[in-house]
Image (tube, rainbow, N blue to C red; front, side, top):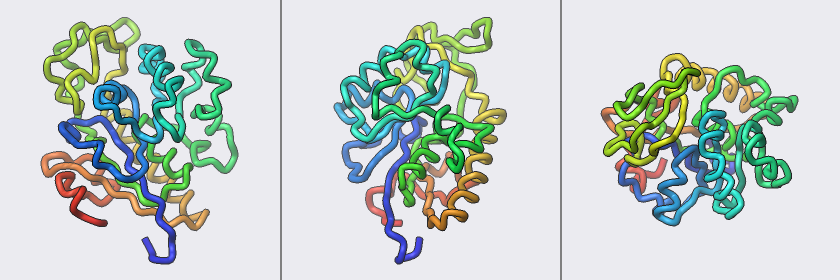
Amino acid sequence: MSEETQARKCIVLGNGRTLKDFDFKKIDTETVGMCLAYREWERIDWYPDYYVCVDHVVLKSNSADILKMIQGEKCKGGYLLSDSILEFCPELKENKKVLFLEDFKRQRGNPFNYLTEWDCGSCAVMFAVILGFNDIDIMGIDCKYIELLPETKTLNDGTLKITRTPDENPNYFIDDYQRKGDIYNKPNLERVHMPSWEHIVFILTGYTRINNIMMNVNVWTTDEVEGLSKFFSKYDLKNYFVVDI
């Protein structure tokens, strides 16, 4: 990023295993978090500034918890959700801090308007750009999954249900990220996640050039995890608080 460009920095926090034992309270910049990580945030009494969940299945299965978080004003900046949650929480339609993916997709000139493939992580990064952040660090988006855990069963519609809270969940930074009764989509890394990142990077490249936005996006992970290094510069997560990029 050039010295002439004023940097506005944030961290986009995924929920991958690389963030196990990460000290969120040491973060001194704005943050975007997502999905079921609120279970850990509640436990440690720390919340990100912004929250993203655009997964229809997760929103349906966990709408009561998400509504409670929003009504408690835990994330001071705001929320990006799918409007599918309005079926269960219609009161969110009037909440000024709640924005909806589908509204963004209808807005001409909004990069979300060009989306054909997405997931919560890629939408979180695009949301950060919409919010005006141009220096973005990505953590915990590992793109590394065991597709079917022993504690899951496949439902008739193809979604998965947690039958017992895992003692150890290799996919996430806390073992009870998914709990008994949760319903979720199969990760489908190669069919869903990686194509969504390819699509998001393509859109953002055009959007930032057209609007003359200087972007600096880095992924922080571990040696054994490739993560999103196909798309962004990769750095060692254990050095995050001692390295200035």
